[in-house]
Image (cartoon, rainbow, N blue to C red):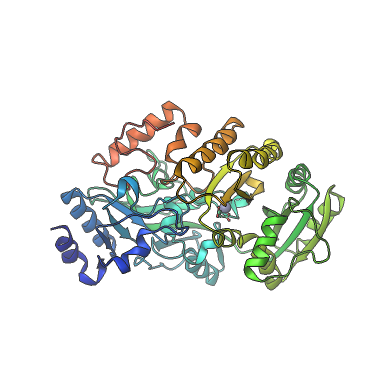
Length: 469
Ligand code: 2HG
Ligand code: ZN
């Protein structure tokens, strides 16, 4: 029996079947995706992960790998085609090896949180080039499997740019290990890269080797209220061209900041200056070996459209400014279960796209409330919609199709940094050509011929590559 075999491999304490206990593994962070698992397996070693995969393969039971379960596209819960799967939680693989200071690398178990790896690197004088609000729960295995983006992509790129090597357990239980740490190692296809962003559909990541980045001596953040979005986009160009220490340019709007203030009981960032609700605010951060405040101030003073600015140089003040930005997801989720979309649109077309969204969303869903924020330097906009009827799946799909079709028409991406998961499956064809879809299906078939790994994510269960759009 499946459960008996899993208990034999992991011990009874680490094979969870009690619904009161498994429910948190079966429901995604937003509450939008839930399913039932036959069991939650909690291995502690790579060998145990391999044993779980061999057992599941023998019994023909699908496997849904799960890290911190902070993903926002339903990719780590046993919903839809993965109903009745074993949830394979990697959270017990928390070991972090000593930093290789000469090579600037660290290798961590898939279940180590991003915050723990950041702290470990910091103690050795290094930083990690990936950062985002869910750092305390998101695991490094999860960020590699989803090719997470976040707030430092401007300087360091997505997670793919930080992954130097991986250990991965394949569908048949064999272990693929590429942890040489050599920056020059050009022998055949780059297999670690194949698993980065594969969302648990090609193998189970058990170790992640990350490139480390320097720790800047000085850091300055500023929150800028800007007259309108075209001026904000213009400011991105100015900052890129003139401020070499630029590290992040994040976008929020007046209504979103008000929502965060109400949710967290914070004072408004510009007290006594009630800017219109659709006023864009840019959170700009600069880092460098010397204080970058002067460079940032000089660029902002000569820029057009800046209505007001708050500058933060101490860690406490910077955290206060970042809270206005990072508090958005929780503040929106506190309203209800939102429709969450994550698009990228070329910066030159961002203003027209946002104008169209503000007209399109109420036209398709009159009860809807639109929440926009994102990573402006990377042209990445998070589109959240609340006020929709929870049970109206058709209405949610209609709105999703309208928004994603509009983004794709502008040469945009329907999944900028959160991946495909179960949430975006029906719309993958808007962003990928038939030739690309065929290669995705072929790769999936080569590595997971029986379709046991996270079925229903990226490639449809039939392995045909024929998506619904
Ligand atoms: C962010 O940048 C995260 O805040 C979450 O990627 C976005 O909740 C969201 O839609
Ligand atoms: Zn984001």
